[in-house]
Image 1 (tube, rainbow, N blue to C red):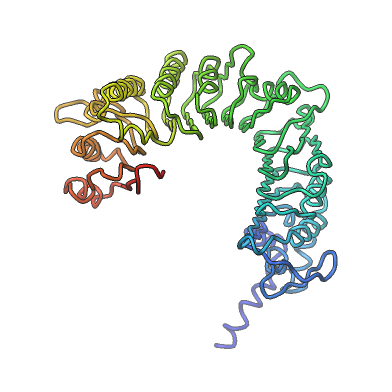
Image 2: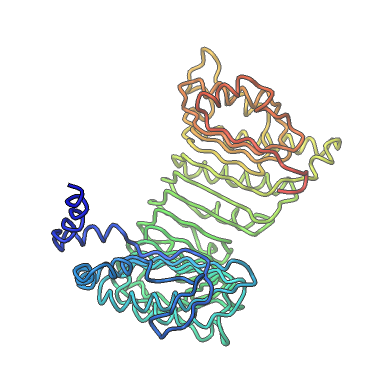
Length: 492
């Protein structure tokens, strides 16, 4: 009996049909290499000899399955689609150990060769501590050579300096009808950006386009009035005139559902209004400490079906008036569009540390209170919110009083009756601890709709998770709660 048990697995594996083996092998995809790497010992163009600490491509599926037996070898080599999906994420251990991209280059060559003409799904993420990598140029060239069978391609090269000549010698011209997803990022790769020319007429199946930092759209000749199938778009606006024309056409795509703009420039938004009837998700990141770019966008943009809005300012706003101008612009935008907003993220700035030190100044205090009232006025009409994240937004006591459920009140009479999660980051939070706890506990007890609370409060704020038994009871009963405190008045 023992011998039969030992022999059965091998016999069963040999009896499996090729089609069933293919399905089993398919579950091992995508082929994945995710690790810090050391330079491999060279063993030829396509066969690096792994040292003790180097990446061994023989461990990666389907290469590892290829070495099991002759029947598996035949199945894997006859199914080119098993080689069409590859994910490579490389990071150096530290600045003393630069990356070796030779393994990644070798991997691409083997997988591209074995995949023959099958569609390619490629994800490459490389972080390099500002070093030059000659293999990176070759990787880009190899990718572009195979673009005729791209399906989904993501390339993120961060802190990898291109070799001599840099981006001036690299130009990516993309025109493939099979492409559905493209994400490119060459963050701090070179003093210059990498020009990418996309033939929107040829890329008729393109649904998602992400052009992040270090990438600039280049002219590819006559383009359609606007691409018809773009669903998700991430842009890093440029001052280049040709690039701006193409970007405006991309934004005008009638099926655009998700739009993310990093540092929107006034030139991108300077021509007329922008009507986006299909847009549901809008995310904006700005480095403008005056908030003029986002105010410009608020005036021109109209998206009546928006459900998710997120804004993040990367620069500190040191003037309360700028924050109030932002809130007024957002209020007008919402009043004009009347979108069914369900998720709102406002990260106006990291916090005004000077407010704490100047609280005895009557003018500062009145401005603070006025800004808090404005925040409440802006937020109150958003009755459909399910997720709320506020950072650097001044909030007043009355807002939290109106957010709390009271006995005898219908939920429809309370601000944000559908709220499921709330996140507040505020180093100058002046709402009383009892008012904050009441808002949380009454909402939790009213049908358990509130699921998650994430708070980051001033360093000297009362430790509410320790001093309020009713809050601890809600947490024990299942409320997801994270309460943190700023370490110092000036460190975020």
